[in-house]
Amino acid sequence: MQAHLQDKLEPTFLEVLDESWQHEGHPGANGTGFGTHFRVRVASPLFAGQRRVAQHRLVYDALQVFIDAGAHAIAIETL
Image 1 (tube, rainbow, N blue to C red):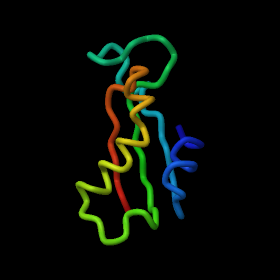
Image 2: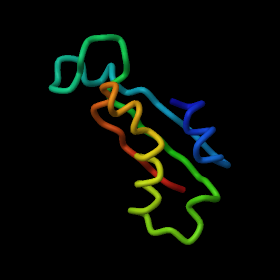
Image 3: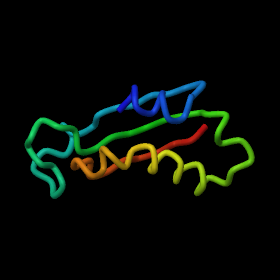
Image 4: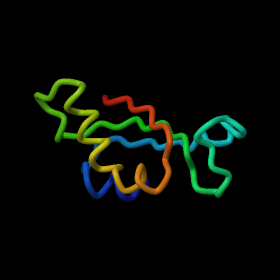
């Protein structure tokens, strides 16, 4: 996920935390070993002049492949 975001968003700051362990037994936790709950903090020049919703859409679009693979929750903070 980190490398994928690096490639798609060319960030000046990027932090990806897998918080799946905090959600064991909750709906959406799939028990496959693939992370399901993530926290992403990112700053990118692509965000310049964009409203927060547009910034988040860029991040979600970049992460669609992970969402399709079972990522259940992604908390995004754009900087």
